[in-house]
Amino acid sequence: MIDGGRPAGIMFTVKNSKIFMRAAAMQVHKFSPLIGAEVTGINLRQPIDAETRHQLNTALVENVALVIRDQDFTPPQYLAAVSLFGEPMPQHFTQYALPDCPLVHEVSNRHKDKAGNRVKHGAGWHTDHTNHLRPPKYTCLFAVSLPSSGGDTAVVNMRAAYESLPGDMQQTLHGMKTVNVFQGSAAANYSGQSADAQAERKPEPVLQPLVRVHPDSGKKALYFHPVKTENIVGMSPANSQKLLNDLLERSIRDEFIYRHKWRKGDMLIWDNRAAMHKAHFDYDPNEFRLLYRVLVRGELPIAA
Image (cartoon, rainbow, N blue to C red; front, top):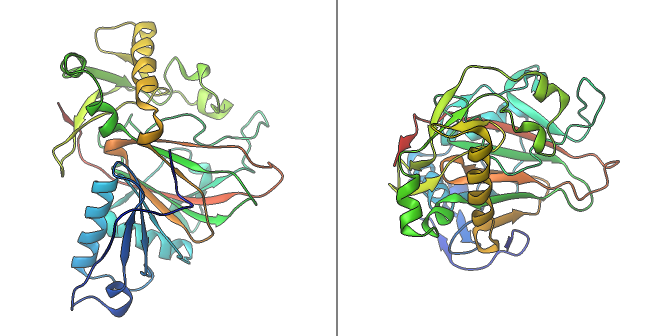
C-alpha cells in the first residue's frame, strides 16, 4: 500500500513559456509505478492555460489518483477548479448539497440519516453512481476540516487489478454486464449503508460493462459497484455477488492501493473509470471531519 504522507519516486517539472508563473513551478511526484501522484506548485484559484490543464488531466489518467496540495477555496472556487477536469454533474443525496453551490456536496461525519444513525459516507469499496447511463469519470474531494489523525481515503487501481487476472478469466469477463440500481438487493450486506440509502432504492436499471475500456488510454479495467449491482445479466443475484466478491478480493492488494493521508488544503481526485475507493473511519467521531465533493460527468462506458 502506498502511503500518501511520504511522497517518493519520479519527479518532473512542467515547463512552458505560456504558463503563468505559478504553473511554471508545477511539479508531479509519482508515489508508485501503479497508483498515486502528488501535484505541488500550482494555485487552482488562478487562471490555468490549456497546456497546464492538459498536463493535469494526463497525470490523472496515468496515475489514477492525483492529490493537488495547498489549495484554499470557497465552494464556487472549488467548483471552478474541478471544472478544469470536465463538467460537474448532480449527485445523489441532495440533502448534502451546499444551498448556494448545489453541485458541491458536504461529506461530513456529523450527518445523520432519518433513523438518527451517523452516516458513514463511502465506507465500503465502490465506484460512484454506476446507476447513471453516463457515470462520473472523476470524483474530487477537498479537505475543509480534519480530525487530528485517521480518516484516510483509499483508492485502488482496477486497471492493474484486471491486468493481474489470468487470461482465461479476463476473456470470461468480457461481454458481461451488471444491472445497476440506486441500491441493489445486497446493500444490507455492506457496512455504511444508511437507512436513507436503503429507503431510496430505485427500480430503474442501468446496464454497465463488467470490464470497461478507458476512452483515453485504451486500457481495460474492472468496473462494478457491489452495492448498486442487482445482478450480472444471466446470473442470479447470489451468484453475481459471489463473483463480484471474488473479483474484489483479488483486486484489493497493497501494491494496487493508494491510501491518502489528508492534509488541510488537499484536493484529491481519482479516475472512476479505472478505480474504486473507500473511506476509513479510524478516527475519533467527536472530532469534526468535513470534505467537499464534486463529481465530473463521464461518457457512456465502452465494453471490452
